[in-house]
Length: 350
Image (cartoon, rainbow, N blue to C red; front, side):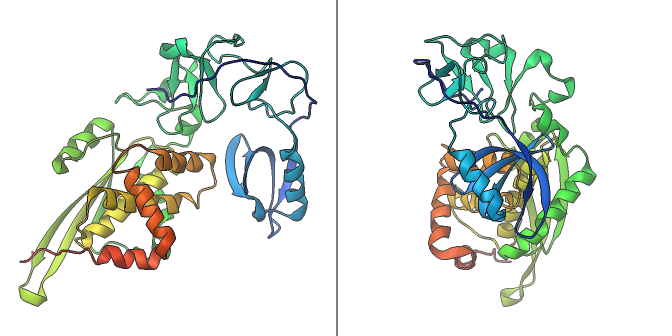
């Protein structure tokens, strides 16, 4: 299903024009990179570097760059081209566009007053009537026109991906292992130790993932899954357990989403080895917190989109549970939260 924002045209205005400017950005530590400013939200900015969109904290950059951002943010801009508004414009209930920019990406016709349309988080717009011609990326929700897409953007299991996400796709086992190595330092920072037992990664399609999920009665729009087998040995106070973990991850997820999924599943492994027994909203909410922490280290716009989707999710487990655990984390911090989770441990008796 396409996620959309609907709007209605109701006015035209005329303002001045400013053009996008590619410039050299300098961080506090002297690192330089060339990019275009595309977004300013509170204390974060969006930069387009080599055709990719990234999000950074504004205080990361030099005083000169911060002054540039403040001036840039004062100008009213078209959400499509990001240039300052001037000439003939068209306004919706939420935004104002250059008339030449305000057009459907499928039929390429300009929207007219009263027409309903849909928008993605990346600025793509299309008539609602073009549902069969339009696809929405399963990872980032970016729209693309079906008959203009590359065949590799369509997976055999029915998933679809935009060109950017498939270019960043984790498409083989070696890349999946690299992503796992990337998240390990972040997990250690949180206090989530490496597994005591064996851990095997499996890259699978959606059909196989769903079949494996039925083993633990899990359902939904899953991206990953953890299955843990354990064996308790010994008696009384001298018991110990051995573990065998399998993490299943969807084939072809973009790198950043794969980071999110593996961090979430790593948290499940940590919980399983401690036999932590809690309600699904608490368990999945905690795992989403760990995922969010890993995503915070990723500077691409996709990481922000995934975090926003978690925050807005209407799922009583993955959404409400995450928001509840996020509120708890803000109150007590990670160290105390981990202690609270460990207190829920209920090891089996031999």
